[in-house]
Length: 80
Image 1 (cartoon, rainbow, N blue to C red):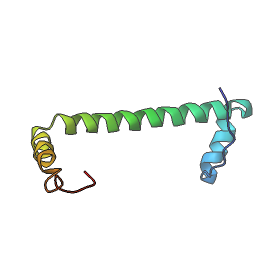
Image 2 (image 1 turned 45 degrees about the vertical axis):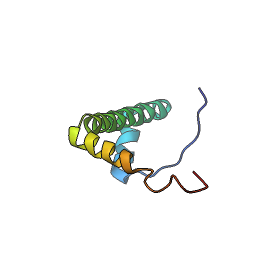
Image 3 (image 1 turned 60 degrees about the vertical axis):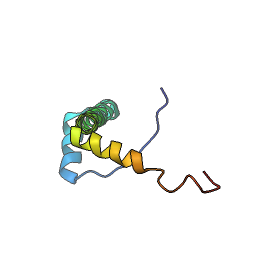
Image 4 (image 1 turned 180 degrees about the vertical axis):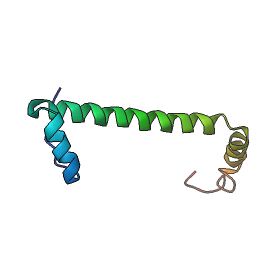
């Protein structure tokens, strides 16, 4: 796996705790795992929202109604 160097800012007290509790050669791995977990959590949350919308009968009806009117008035135009 290819790695890239990044630069980000931490509050001073958090950085001090990082240096105190995480050995120097383990910091990148620890931070990488924490970022990965946060991304997974947010992706799961977005997936749940998408499924909730997909399963919402009111939204489905509105989307069907909107789809029925999507091409209204375009049949006679040359770009269609």
